[in-house]
Image 1 (cartoon, one colour):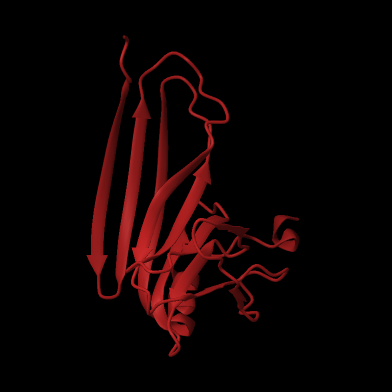
Image 2 (cartoon, rainbow, N blue to C red; image 1 turned 90 degrees about the vertical axis):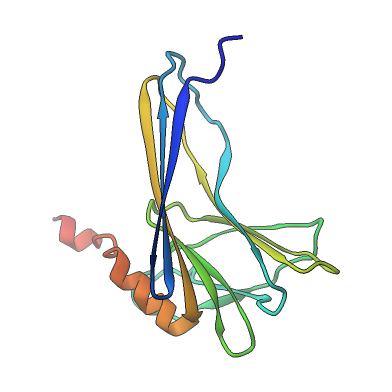
Length: 168
C-alpha cells in the first residue's frame, strides 16, 4: 500500500506542578480527510482516590463562576461532556487532584470510573479535519494541585476569549 504519509512529534515541558504537552502532526498526503472523528489528546488513567470530576460548563466562562461536579458512570458506560472553560479535573475529598486544560479550546471530554480497577479515566478530545499537505498543532496542560489554585493558573496560562463588546 501507499502507507501513511505523516510525521508526529510531542514536546513535553515540566515546571513545578504543570506538564505542557505540545503536539504537532504534519500530513504530507494529497487527500483531504474530513470528519475524522474524535482524537484523544491526551487520555489519563488516574488513581481511584481522585474520583470527583469537577469542571465549569456554565454561561459565564472566565468570570470565576461556580464550578460543577459531574456524575460519572462506571465502566463500560462513559460520560461525554463539554465545558466552557476548556478544562476538567479529577479531585479527591480535599479538592486536590489533576486538571486537563486544552489551549486549542476544544470543549470535549470523556470520563468513566473503572470499578475494581486501580484507575479512573479522563480524556480530552479534539475533532478536526486534515486537509492535504497540512499541519495540526495542539497544546494541552496537565496541572496538579488544589482545584481553586489550578483554575487560577489556567486563567493565567491563556487569556480568556474576547467578549463580544471588545470586538466592536
